[in-house]
Length: 183
Image 1 (tube, helix red, strand yellow):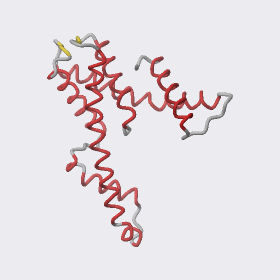
Image 2 (image 1 turned 90 degrees about the horizontal axis):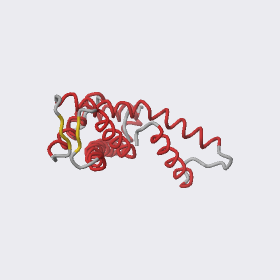
Image 3 (image 1 turned 120 degrees about the vertical axis):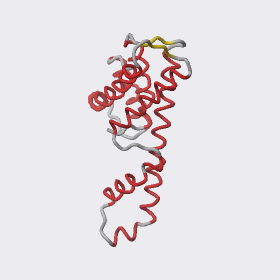
Image 4 (image 1 turned 90 degrees about the vertical axis):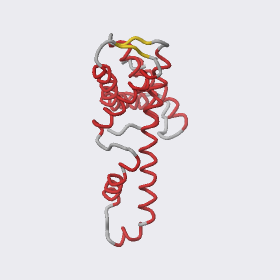
């Protein structure tokens, strides 16, 4: 699953909590700074992909007439161009490989900035980070469905996409994350 930018703080918080609870890692300056650094790495990676997708869209728009004439499916062409340009933007398209790389980058950043210490192998700690990312992704849709269901059951009907809906959604989403120990 593709991670979106608004998810970065939640994933980062889950990483920090999972590292703290792992028993493998000790923090030198607390959970918040670890979550902040993890979020920085995640955000940087996500921004690379957004830049790539923006460039791909520009290319497709420049060639819109030609694509229409040849009856090329835009979604397929988007994927093909994105795949061709991914290396140029340093974006890994395989999510498993990408999350592995991001987990390693987070670990390196935390260790280099002396925010964590561990006495187990580096791979064990990296796997805690990778698993935190994977677990968040697996539970995301379930959490989102629960929040939407709660909003639908409210007496006051909210319209998706409005500011009020988004505020309520965000509040309920955070509550759901807290219930699951992800925040």
